[in-house]
Length: 211
Image (cartoon, rainbow, N blue to C red):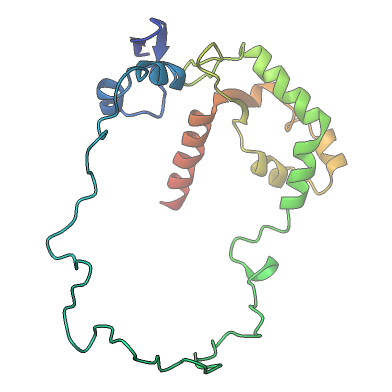
């Protein structure tokens, strides 16, 4: 586990699991955004009193015309002045778009989305999350980060065996069946992760499924 000392506050901080070594060595100097903001106090921005808008040589200047045909002529009346319905009517006007929904969609899984939301809102789910966070002492089990002053990370309780796979394997169709399912509320199937590590795990598994 790689560690550094913050330039501003002097506290130690750990390398995030999903950060590259190049960024960790070259860019990561502060333990939090608060410390990085404090380091900028009293310093002038690099672009102060500088004209940063680069104008290319080929840019057309004000009053310059490339062609006599295309330049604006005084007294010229636009061709569409006072005319209505000049623009062509779009092909999809007053046409209803037929959405590919439910059984027609390639990723249709029998309508488990609504059931999934019902289960996640259950008070038993909140208890399951709290028990996992307490067991892991509110520390991310991948990168070792925890909530402290200047580093207010968000922790998640992650299902090691995925939530959707448990619903499919146990053929859960109602919230009552979900409450009675022991595998869904097994604490050994849960792990505490921070936001970055949680996203990284899901992304890596999605990539493996695509191969």
